Length: 239
Image 1 (cartoon, rainbow, N blue to C red):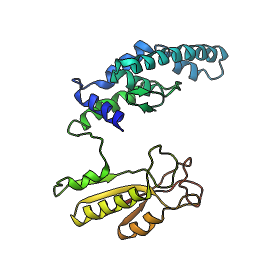
Image 2: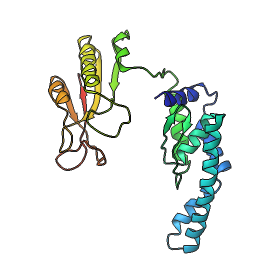
Image 3: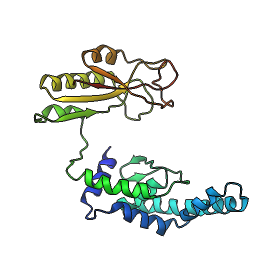
Image 4: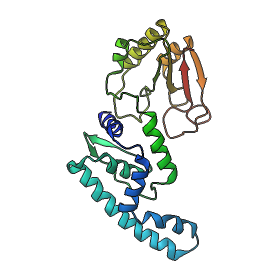
């Protein structure tokens, strides 16, 4: 998604190695009531503490929506966007370019684990090039001996994706992977195993040529589910 690529590239360009620490300071500045959350939740049987947090949460949401509108109206400060995400359990949604539309805001906040995570993330992505292209362009890349390709496409026949993924796209993807295999390029593909409400005959026919790894995935809110009623995530590799 072009907005997500924009966000990654903004993080890449940022001239500080302590983004997580800066987000924590922004959280304290804009959402000081988050400091009260721990006390309120620890006082589970204290109705007064619960009432105070409930009132503070209303104030927090007002600030949240003002920041969201500020971003949408042209500020486009990626740190503000990250702050909004972290106060919304890390969720983010765009409906048009650079328009952040997620409405919910609750108990989430920036914490020490997030700070450490963002600081490490900055270091990990320094040599990565983010781009938004059709997956077919991978064929034109001149891979080196030890290169590795990982693909996580929309899962054919499931409903969690707004992007329309067609049967032709599915077949083009397999053709691409066969091409990579012929060039001795290692790849891994994430997908669903067939289940009660999910069948992908194209995948079932194609994947037997390669190695299938069944992952211990406990998600149960998607259409691809196994015989036990839970989603069965698989990883297909050529190595």
